[in-house]
Image (cartoon, rainbow, N blue to C red):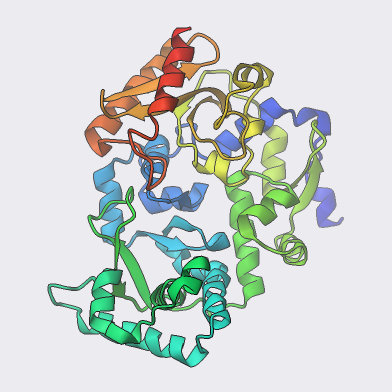
Length: 412
């Protein structure tokens, strides 16, 4: 009997949007089963936490395992977790077990920055020379009171070894040669950047020397590992969703799917999902939990970001409620943060630091469980984080209009 004959068969009509939302909720560990796990264990199980200078990484850990900022920051300081450039060249917070191959997945983005310099007339030898100079400087300051150096400090030491690329460079996003050299060194695991205040919800960094061993694996092996993780984190995804997250070509994605033995299954909505065989078996027996299960998540939480499918998490009533609402409604990327019940978006929220409160709106009257969870998260943000930014440039002033809109809708 072939392996394919041993895989459970699921009729498409069973895979309704409601069931698939709850299934994703389960795969993402939002059902309470991760309580007590460490930060790296959570990130390994549910996926890397997107980091753009916002608080998503903290809420990712708090929502799933009750991990507070002090514990998360301690894991960061011990290098049990780290913010690194990986898939698509984007930065995520990874567990230590994924550092080397995560960097390898994103290495082409660092190479792309070097290609910009080459088009500006910078020679490869100059970039390599600058990289070696940076590495020498950072290795030389170990054990001193300048163990980490920010880009300005590096430029002061390196002097004219860092070339200014003028107006033409600015137009192409490369004012000097330093960022490309830093990116290449980081992608090679030879340096790492650390937040200046030890927190994940900001974007001011210094650099220290690093000696991360490479995987020793070919890119095809690493791509298969990425796909296996991605399918485990999501519980299944379309080819388009796979390619969006990984930036694989069609040929690379199909080769990785073959390498992990993924199978394709049709849904009631007509989508074609790729799943690991073990997840097909579990999905065949999965039922939507009957009890209400409420979470407030970040708009860039893995539940919505990995597949960039936030519109799928609204039911028809939710879609109707947000119809015509700009910015956050049915967009690929949520700007307001979601309130969810077993994977279904039932409302939106923002944090108002001026009044130490959560501004929120639910599409139907809020249940006691919703109000309780809002209160819990409000207290945690106020006491543990102080604010909840979506990204580095987010500020109380920039979200004031969104807060006012949520208040108006809730009180209407």
